Image (tube, rainbow, N blue to C red; front, side, top):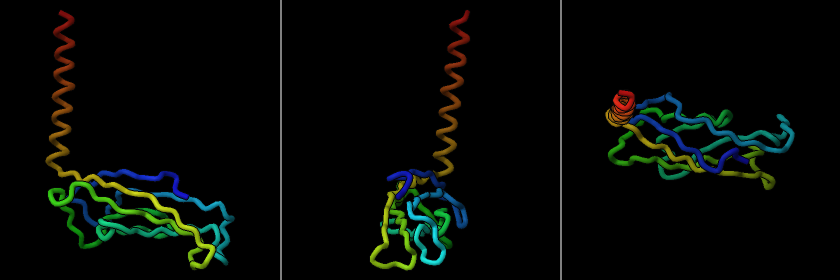
Length: 134
């Protein structure tokens, strides 16, 4: 079972492998048994933008895939599904859970524009508050 049903992340369109964007976590209530695999959780990716990312099947860490170039203009939000499975050997008792990941692509220009606007707003509020004192 995932700790969250959905995850949100931000990723710069200039990001390259092996940059990590997020780590997901799911738990299994079974006692962890290395012989049978019960209690062990393994992760995989599915969905529309899954090919742009890789996931460590044991830790749940999601990274930009090797040789991938992101493009915010083509697809500003990347969505995919993370699947957590117990009993890694498969079988009729295997259980699965999924969570949706939405990764907002950011350009450096947009990032600096947002920071600049925030700085200007803070400056204006500060200057305005000084004027009110006089």
